[in-house]
Length: 216
Image (cartoon, rainbow, N blue to C red):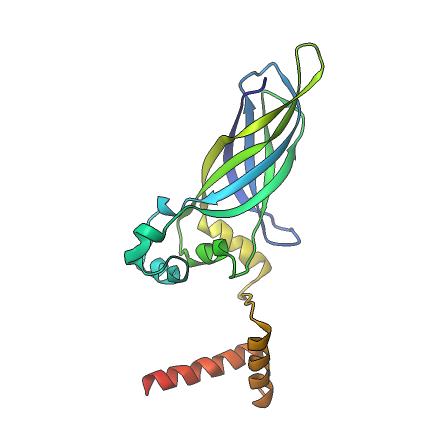
């Protein structure tokens, strides 16, 4: 029966993907090197181990929306789910390396996006947890199937600049903001009634008015 181990050797931006995506180089090894693995139906759960790095004062300010005030972080910082992904590992014997593609959303209603965007530099501590089924050839030449337990996992530290490069490739100098329909309607009426040509100028006008009121 296969005894599999998993590790991540690197990560990079997928340059010509239809949507933002990071590819991880996943190494899969079988300690029973003589066994022939026909395929693996692999499920990967990727967690962000937010307590495994330090945060600058600038990062703490940006992450307040996610974790609250820094003096509460001992209670609010918890390992956070990034995403789930399914993939198929093709036939191999002993060891193989496959690409694991993880989509990256720029939706600020998603906690992972808020977290990544709040980081200035350094690394993002990730935990990959694996499950699924492995199809392998038994001693008689028949095909067997065995489950992969969730205790199969590996850690990897993703560079913040890799995530930023991935997002900037698809959204250069821009961001997406999702609003309730009634709030959008009010903003739209504000823009139209004042003859403001762009959404950026409409928001700048509102911010300027708010800042002037605060100074007064």
